Length: 350
Ligand code: FE
Image 1: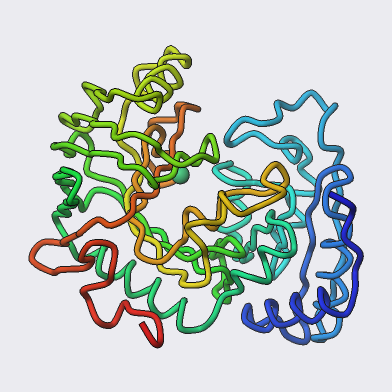
Image 2 (image 1 turned 90 degrees about the vertical axis):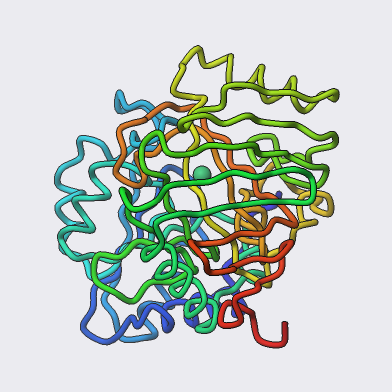
């Protein structure tokens, strides 16, 4: 993809984004980036912050080559550069173009009070999925509903019937901007999720054609039946390639913890598109925020739970957004075959 230029459109969009984040005069906004990645985002965010009266600068670190392990969760090119970490801790807001996710450095920066905005999608996706205050309202309501529930049941016409015991873990909401000290978010997004109490997931999950295997940026083509017992997948059945792919992929890590059930929740961004993976001409440049966020999906996943404070840090992670599911929290009906049954969770006009 040709490099994007900073132009009026990008500057306007980033300024609106920083306004949602309540960036104001007297604040310090620091952009963090690695190597030559997205220099135009770094410049445009600085100009946008400046136009709102904030002080701003850019910390750029070599992406590789300082003895750091790249591409592993919780390890990144900032590891060990204490001076840079200390500087970020003193910022009001950090624009993270590098990817600190899951790291102890990120936790440290958040604890110090800096809010962090992760940005990684190409510009056309930032524009298309741009957050709204109503998306925030619905995503925060999703978080509150998840927080007060003790049981989640998911069913589908394809045969899914699975129950999650809740309460042990916190709930995370992502709606695409952040205006609270110490809060992390990802621009753009639109979902809330938690994790079952250790060992407390039981039942059957049937992956149906059209559900998305995010790790492969591919739609399920043939039904796959996962049997789940005490928080782990214990059996995979299916006639087609998908059952084989999933089994082979998880097996390849040689890690029994890769069979664990991970975070669970639902998507609420009506601007995110389920069909995006099929329609995009530049998938290799993109991430999976459309797939994770599309309106009414049940975001099922397997593998690690460190993001929510658990101890499973297996690198084997599958996000699998499911279509057309029904979902209950205790006795509250949240989703009915992929549509929100809970009125206050519906997007305007839906
Ligand atoms: Fe995930």
